[in-house]
Length: 268
Image (cartoon, rainbow, N blue to C red; front, side, top):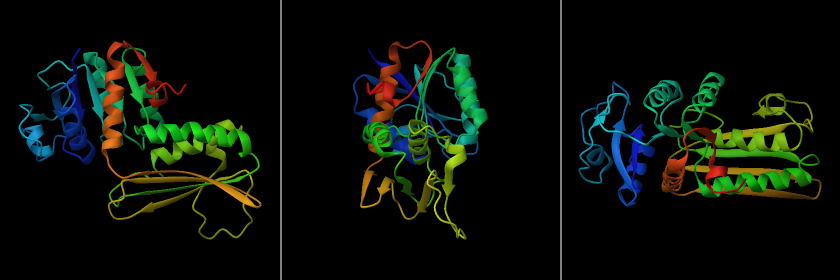
């Protein structure tokens, strides 16, 4: 069975990588490529833009303008584009894989409501390794999370828009939930000017933006006399692209519902 895929953000870093990955998977056919209306790539062939040769798929400025029927749209765009993309996919009955981060509560609520009518995989990180780390964090947090000082350090390239990363936030949410805390109440984002002793209940975040770092995340559980560090370092965007395409294939027999990568890789 061939899955027809569309890509939102086709001319971006992740969009190009997803196009490259899809070209080499026999059960996947790229049928649509979307960019924002002001993009200089509108009207260009998506494969040519990605440097993988002509695909016969022209980049357009909206999901609705795509002339081909698409089974699943993969969205790696910006936070302010997601709601419009969801609206169009829901109207057309297309499934979605959403890897865009930095979403506000309104966008997250829209994802939940749309999932009553279409199937959606929504995850801050599509990497299989990162999602394995999420499970390891549950184990660590349930074992020593209430006794340890928890710090989350993340690093990305200089052009990343949101900070901390969606992956770092999700790590904090997992630890907070496992240890009966609310991340909104206990998160500390940097400590400039802080002179008080560390709050035992807090979860600290530190953000690095530099060079072309693809994505590094380290969670530290520190107690007196020892510490545990759980780290993931991405060396290629293909990790995220492969995970996103895997999620799209997994959605093939799902009519509706909201899922994450833990569902896709059977870690639940």
